[in-house]
Length: 304
Image (cartoon, rainbow, N blue to C red; front, side, top):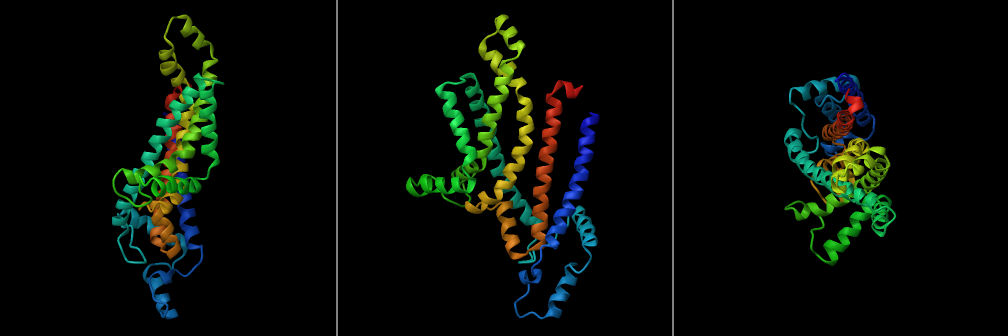
């Protein structure tokens, strides 16, 4: 319990430091932020007045703590481009990204763990070779290139799945597969390696000598003892999915956090960029914390 509390405290410090770094980086990135709201004919005085109204003329540290105070009161501000409420925007975009990310994460473990287990149990067979080759290809192909290939095959040639947009479950298939591809490949290799290491332990031979069935040994004992590296991998998969979502959402026109963030960066919309960038930082940090806590709970030695 003490170790978990220490990790939580360290995570809070990390969140504070990383949020300020993101906030400052956005402010120091350069560019004319007034171009997002004011016409090209606006005078220098008009632009200076606008900066004062939105508080961008203050020192960065003061802007940061003012922003934190407003955020804790539930005031996320408005977009500089169209004056839309970021609170309303966040609910819709975060829900869409959560749906896509959750679908990809389910695919990562629902496909990666069983394939890795099968590859380990059929070691050096044609099944193992096929699954290993699949995992190597999954890690080698860039996700944007895989997205274009799948769009060409399933949306243009066979026309069985939509190429972009949001609607029913059919719109979710291609982006979630692309987003999960590398995670599935890494999970397959990690599971295969962990299971092979566990199969070489003495307790496996003892269980076989005791007359337990292979199915019970593999699913209850071997797989369970192989979960430690897989749990650790889960936090990294969350960060990977968050990072790749920026590209995948833009390619497939998925109206989530990634697409909104990219569009806001192009428009120099500071309030929108800083909020959704902080959302991504929080998700990645909490994902790593969850993996760390999960590793502690799964490992009996660390639990004690």
